[in-house]
Image 1 (cartoon, one colour):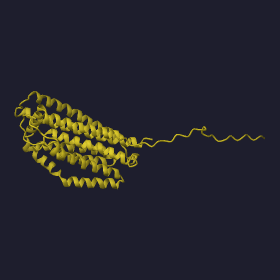
Image 2 (cartoon, rainbow, N blue to C red; image 1 turned 180 degrees about the vertical axis):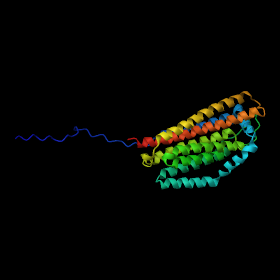
Image 3 (cartoon, rainbow, N blue to C red; image 1 turned 90 degrees about the vertical axis):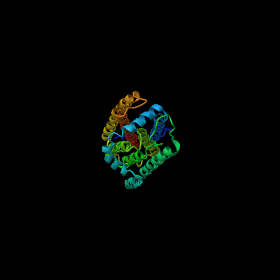
Image 4 (cartoon, rainbow, N blue to C red; image 1 turned 45 degrees about the vertical axis):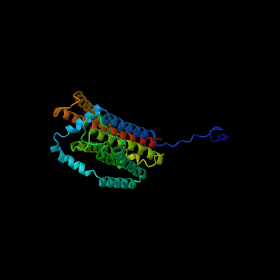
Length: 312
């Protein structure tokens, strides 16, 4: 019986080598874009609500409107504001850093430090040295108070927890953090400490530093090795949370726009009573709209960078 000839093993064509898979890198661009957009938001907020006559009048009107019902709301607002302090920031920074280290996510610990340290320091520098409040012919009860320190602290605390908690509960933590930030911001209006623009600028400062932290994380861990266990990912929960926050931003933004348009039509002088309360409602809804949008952007930013790192 004839033995069939043995075929040589298949080999790659001479002169060609098998292509090597290039490792995915965590993208830097999304974080950079978020940081730039939020920074522009701070500048626009200052330009309109501090330097322009119309914006300043609406801002002051909202602050004066917050006096209505202050006796009733102050008890709740005082409890919220008393929690925000330097010891709280130190405790949260320590707790979130330890949680990140326990989860073997040292990069996250660095990101938390960047956000909390950078945002709160930036707020103090902007408020006391960089963003002045020139006279535009409108009486002001407060000096330069943009951005709000209390709101910056609250938003940075909420953001820190969004970063370090496991993925499966991150969407819920983001929603709770949004509510906490809005309540703190509106409480500063009730207390008569800040105008709506101060609160909006504070939330944007925290978002800007969240973008910077994303860039830092991408540079420290370009391959995304510390992005965590994919098994803990809950894309549907993230999608639901983002949809909820975006809806909140749109509805609140629409209400704020209508209220502020009505207030602007009544300028230059807002009458005590309904007109001032309308300005106050518009400012409060504006705070809610911006905060919802910022936390939705934060969730999308985390989702985008982590998904890119896991993609084959």
